[in-house]
Each structure stands twice: as C-alpha cells, then as structure tokens.
Image (tube, rainbow, N blue to C red; front, side, top):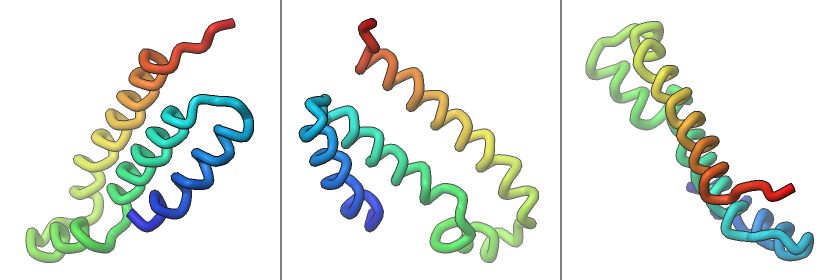
Amino acid sequence: MGSVFIFAPIAIATSISLGLNPVAAAIAVVVSGWNGGYMPVDGMPAMILGMGKYKLPQFWLFSVPMYLVRIFALSVGAVIMFPVHG
C-alpha cells in the first residue's frame, strides 16, 4: 500500500498536466500495487510457506499462474474501460 500512496498522486498529477484521464492512471497504480504484493516472500507468502511447510516451487506453481491471470485481466479491463481512439 505504501507504493500506491506514493505513486498514485504522481500518476494523477502527471496525467492531469498532460491532459489525460487521471482515473486510468490511478487504476493502473492501484492494480499494480495489488499485484506487487503477490510475489515477494515476505508477509502472507512467508506465512504460507512457513506454516504450510510448502517448498518455494510449490508456492510458485499456484502463485505465478494467478499473477499472469491478474495481468491479463488488467490488460483486458484497461482496453475495455479506456479504449484507444485513433
């Protein structure tokens, strides 16, 4: 959440100064922050690995595909919500 609190105002201010929609930038920062907490081995993943006695490859087996699903969903959602008119 710290990265969202730092980068969201920067992305919004940059979008406004460029005359772009700040909602798109804010959503991109929030979803990126949401995805960023998925892969490191601190916090919740560390608890899963420690308490569940899982090995790191077992953790990756389920977390990497879900990370890719999230990226795909973000990309499709961004195209649907903010179409590029050209």
